[in-house]
Amino acid sequence: MNVEPLLVYISEYVTLTEDEKTFLKSHLTSRKYLKGQYILQQGDVSKTECFIISGCTKMFFVDDDGQEHIINFSIKNWWTSDLGSFISQTPSNFNVQCLEDTEIIQFHFNTIEMLFEKIPKLERVFRKIIEKALVASQNRIVRNFSMSAKERYLVFKQSYPEIEQRIPQYMVASYLGITKEFLSKIKSQITLEN
Image 1 (tube, rainbow, N blue to C red):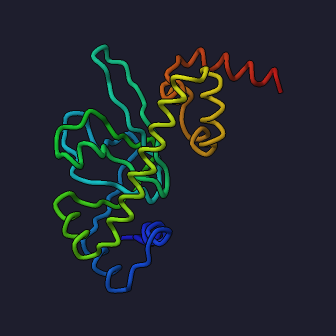
Image 2: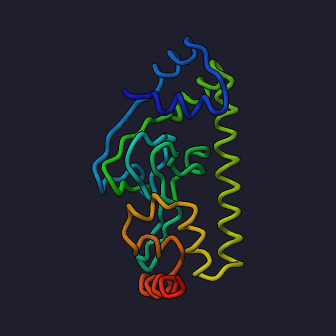
C-alpha cells in the first residue's frame, strides 16, 4: 500500500513520529476502483473517508426526475466521501463514482476515533480538512447566487484547470447548474472575446 502521498499531505498540518506513522499505516486500507465503479451509492451509509492516491471521482445526487446534479470532483491528494453520512452513519444522499481508474486510502469509521485517541494530532488534520470543505462549500453557494453562469465557469476553469481537461463537458455543465448547450455558448463567447 502506497501511503506516502497521504503522509506528505498530513505533514502539511502536523509532524508524525515514526511510531505514529507505523501505527497509522496499520489501520488504513487501500483500494483500487475501475472507471465507472462506485465508492459510495445514494442510500448506503458511508463507512470510509477516502484520500485519493490517483484517479478522479465525482460526487453527485440523482433527483426524483432522474436528473444528475454534480456536487464536486476530487483528484489526487484530495478527499472524497459523503462527510455527513460518514459522521452521522446515516444513509447518504450522494453517489461517489470513479471517472478514471482510481486508487484510494480509506479511513474506516470503526477505527477513526481510536486513531484520534492514539494520535491526537490527526484530529487537527481532519479539523482542517472539514474547515476547508466548509469554506469551499460556502463560497460555491455564494457564487451560485451572485454570479452569472459565465462567471461561475471562469471561476471553475481558473480554480480547477486540471479537472476540466479530464472530464466530459456535460459534467462541467452539471456542476455549474447549466445545460451542456449553454456551456458551449459560454465557451464560444469567451473564445470570441479573446
